[in-house]
Length: 293
Image (cartoon, rainbow, N blue to C red; front, side):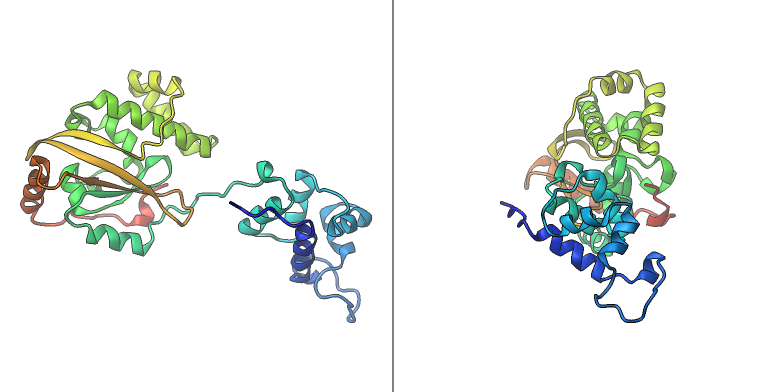
């Protein structure tokens, strides 16, 4: 359970935040060289935030509650970073109005890339925003397709499921899997509904595929964090595999999707055969920085 903020938390945080800044850093003149307080004065913060000195003083003293609009102006005035802004809204009791984290970093961390390489016998894929395929291991390329041969801008799990003949054809229960993928994309849309790349993706698929258009209009949602997939692979035949995804702990919005088979099952044997057949890693012709996002 998260501890409730103390009544004096907001005032203490505002004081500490203004103490870290100098007038020069915020574009204010330093009129005297003998300042009695470290950092900015209350008057200077009030001026930057376009509020009265009396109102700001009462905020620091805990005698008045700040509105979400005032918190936004204070965050700008005090040059608060994203974490500091979220904390400011938390202690002010405005959690519903706090800014959402921006998941703009679509580069895969080196530790995750090492993990992909070490999972050399288990197909694994890193999914980013809009279920974009950011990275994969050679087992994933052997199971699905050589993703490096797909243009980076089109390397999207949902797009491939609907438009790539090999990916679409290997799903024995394509309609079930495709509907789940659309529902998962709907969940993604809730996080950033104004994302222009998401709008473009949905628009293109709606034009190209009537099923996507109909299922998107249903507003069905599903995190698709786990499930069973039934595939027909051109090399090893039918496979029944478990698909599990884990959220990245770095707040990037990335997810690691791992495909496994029941030990000792025919599908497990088939995966082993597939990997022994796949003598060489899939050729990589791009970098993660080109993966789009």
